[in-house]
Amino acid sequence: MYKTGLIEILSRLTSKQMKELSEFVKSPFFNRNESVVKLFEFLRLNHPDFIPEKIEKRAGLQKAFSKR
Image (cartoon, rainbow, N blue to C red):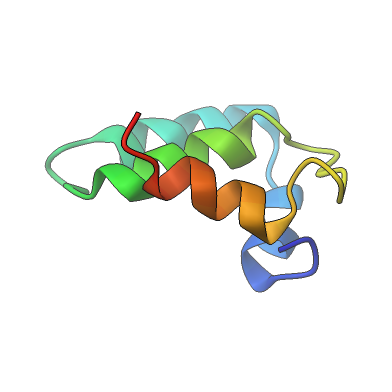
């Protein structure tokens, strides 16, 4: 997941922009998919460094699609 387009875009956002994007992603008006919220929160916690070991694809998908 480290060299995906999503990571490239998110790494260019400022902290303020990430906060605003977080509000957008969490908004039930724009997004009703809880998996998207979980995946975004997983990535947001690793912003802006995105250390490859912490954001490997398997970990991100497990976080997004887990029942917890």
